[in-house]
Image (cartoon, rainbow, N blue to C red):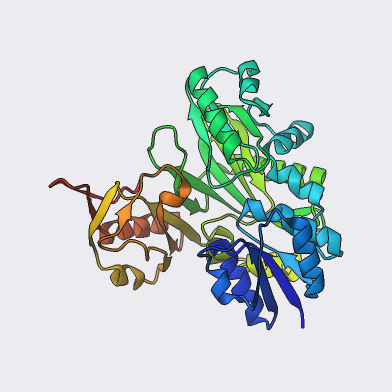
Length: 411
């Protein structure tokens, strides 16, 4: 029997786990204890910190693991690579994965390959930020975190010092990066890499909540409405990064900022894993008909993929995730969620925590938003109309102890 080890036990790994078990594969997950859904689904569990890599290697060897993988989570990917490298399993080298997972190393890769990015500086201590001479505002980020944790836009040098302290604290390696702030339309790019060759799948438009100093996405819609020439340039940058780093195989998720007025493009980040919020497992297949999770599982198992045949069967539809947040307080009313889920264009609505009597928290990080709701359409116009209908149907009220109730915030 093939034995698959999945690093991590969160929601991003559930589609991968289920697909493996449907094939009769024995699945073990490795993670620290916690309320993670994969613990209830897996055949076996290794309760350990994902950064205790040598211990995971030894336990995987003892259990006869024959493949290792993960998806939709940056933090898991270095451990996946480490285990694969040590056990001689299909995968990417640890060094290749770290080039993408460490924001400082990734910026260096972009500089070497000519992929445009913001001015940036490595931060090892809070004092390092005083030497950064790009004009304000800046973005301060942990070098190796995810989900916007510890990421701040700062307008003054004083704010930067506070933000750096927080970013360093949120980084597993206690390192950070400061970047010149770049504005523009955010475009995400989903692709596959096989034997060091890049295959574009889908580009989409990202929208954010209107929040001060916190960057939290509210929606990502596919396909993008961006001019075709911009899309071709982005794909060219993805090909350049792939040619320089040459991963063996991967789902790759990248984010770019495009200034349509000036023609400037700036890469925000890239990762050797599928886009989170069910982008790789659900949204890309909804729009293209391509089984991205199946590709990742096949390659981790050492099964070759006929890329040309797979891409030749693609479809062209529209799909999106939609999130929202609720003002801080107690939920006192919720509309009929079953009605929302009954619409054929709503594939899933992950809003089980929107229940009467439950408290809400302020939207200071991605995990505080509600959803996602996965929506489809035959094209972007129909998709936008379907999203508008979702927003009309789903209603909730929150009270903060006053007589005035507040509703859902969609943007």
